[in-house]
Length: 132
Image (cartoon, helix red, strand yellow):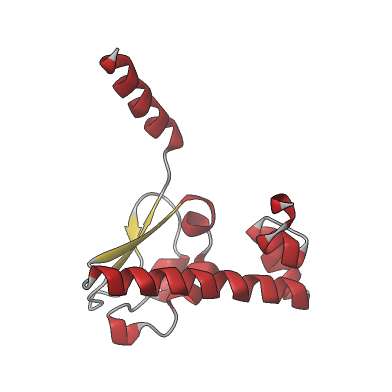
């Protein structure tokens, strides 16, 4: 079933905190799951960069993107030639609002933007109600 695929299918867990814990314990299936996830994420980033021609910013949001510095670092590692230079301290910093995690000289800015699902639901509900 689809509920048993992806990260969970490869590692047995579907929460990245648990995945990182298993990796720290030396679990090879967890490491494989993480590597597969990062490879797919890097493919998406690369394909969008090519399709767009020029990228001003990349944003990470929600669950893993908002809360997992290790995943962001792995996804963007080695992309300095493409203008993406991650500041390790900024990346590891507190998640207390929107923030930039790239160095000042990075030509592509990388942002971490907290998700506000309640606001999005309220805005969409207001749009639907106004259209009635």
